[in-house]
Length: 368
Image 1 (cartoon, one colour):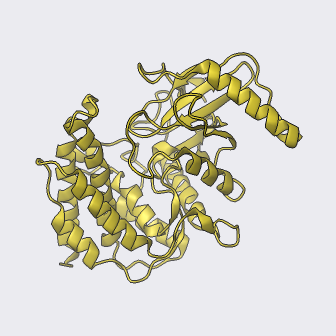
Image 2 (image 1 turned 30 degrees about the vertical axis):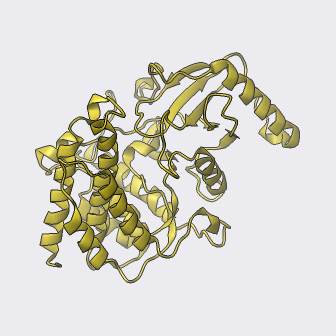
């Protein structure tokens, strides 16, 4: 496998620089303290780190610290005002640390810093998983066949299924979320967030909100949910790219309903026969020959999880509406001049499209 397909960070964006000296001092001190209490975890960092940054920025900022003998990842919240409960680095760190022993795809957590004097906010450091991240398109130079692509697709789904099968009670992870009542909390919560962030140029969403409230499933299953599970949040083995070696971005993980987690995943799933608007927003390679369609994903998931879902429409509409809420919160910031990122300029069109998808699915279901 070509070394060029491995995912790499780029130059640090202007205004998002790290205090490298302060981070280096804190990290070496922290790891030294860990080594004194647990010698098996000893990691001696050599030299000063070269700092690069991964693409993104709407969510948490992610940096790569390249030392002479190893590479580490640093995650911190973005600058500026944060919504209550958002960008909680301590929670994200503790959740992954608790989950690591029972879910093999979580990176190893190395240290959390709540001293804001170091870089202006809290942050955590974890191991770097070196591999391929399947973003909008697979890396140039990575040759794939239809059968290999299908295997990649099912392996990615299997890693989500494996998470949903973790027995959070017997493994002592009941503290990761509230659990029961999750469906109702999500519908009321996202309805409120969308309404508060609504701008004049997007739909009110009231029809979709009322439909979701009316058709909430009576029964809900509770498991550990990722809530942002996409291809571009998994890491693939660079020497065997159909093999999953890591799952990233646990900011939204909690105890929730697994079918709602799947609905969130499918909201991002753009398949080959989708219209041009969907294709223009595609951010993962789910259009490739060999990838399952959304209906096939639901069928595969239900078979592997041994669950019977007569009608997936509620979870489909929820996933699309939630994505509209996320996009609208981002667009609200742009609309009111809180960010000038040009990538957000036309999000209002995407929100119209997502609401249209919601109404189309509702109509097709025959449930009013």
